[in-house]
Length: 484
Image (cartoon, rainbow, N blue to C red; front, side, top):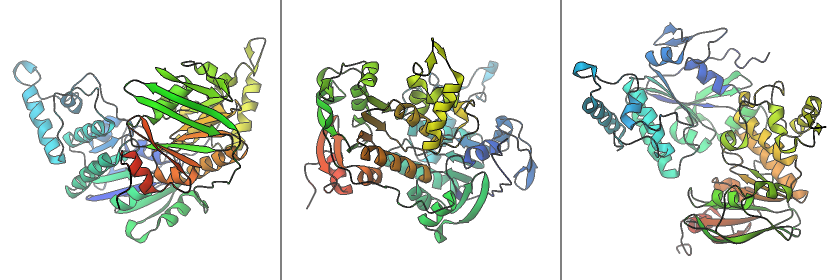
């Protein structure tokens, strides 16, 4: 049996934003679920206002003033914003009918405190992730929550949305709330938080004021070692063209996209959210259809709209959303790791359990997968280890072209370094790698060439020497040239 938490102590103070850092698998999610009443501790206890509190269910935690904002909000899409905020607690008028006017007025007052404008009668369906999170925060405020836990709240937000969330967080802190902020982004931790707690292997390592720390000190405590360079890019010799995309167009999404990727090369698609990068690679792999253009792999045309044809040609796609598109969450680790080659592991049409386990072990060792039994559901793994399972599934097909969409989103710094090392090694072995990333340091640190997209078109192709934060951002915002 693995102990997810071992003797962890954490103190959250009123009027403070407290950061919680640790690698995937360090126990952060288990600690949050214990605070939220999802899990009950085997030893120890939770105190609220200095008094022990026993949470047998999330409702108990909410009644005690504890609210959790998860990375992926869980709103009812067909209900309005106000209905989501007051679900199960709607104000009633005569005849026990819902008093919608009172509910909308209360919603407006909460959003006014937050300094944002969202119509109470707007359906939740269609709200951006950022606005969904604000609705979750409003829900917590309607419950008079004194402890607010934010679990990776900025992972899918743009820069403007992050700043708005920071403003709201500071407002909650100034009103006397205790905010626990979980993030893998150190710039956010140091810009927003007052203190930081580091966890490793289910244990409390340290709690210190942010003012006295450096990023390197936090990283060393998180991983228990010096990570070394986060971007271990190897110099490789560029080989023959492997992937050729010519004039790819999908009306209203992207237009006239052309590029070539050679063996041994990492080409990054950069740009702002909504530029069309993910849509292009999905079309290349055949998940989505395109209206015109052509894709060739090793000189041969690739049939559009057929992922099976892409796989047969040696193309692999690690999608942006690993939980929804990359994994079967209820299935076992070994079943997920071998999904792309089950026919190879079968005999007379029967899948051999031993073959599945042996094949998984090979990649688990190569990718340093941290797991219990391979028969456990993949949902039991941390986000970084789930990403390793997705990589294992596709690398086992021995592809010629590896497309990775946001390969390190939501994973810790130690696992990021491992993923970067793996991509560099694969390119060194002659693989052609296409990387979609919203993190500029990752793009600049890992890419041999950077293709920048803006509103569905490639606006710049930059060599490694030419690519800088300024040159990429100018192209990403549609500027012709940098200002003098």
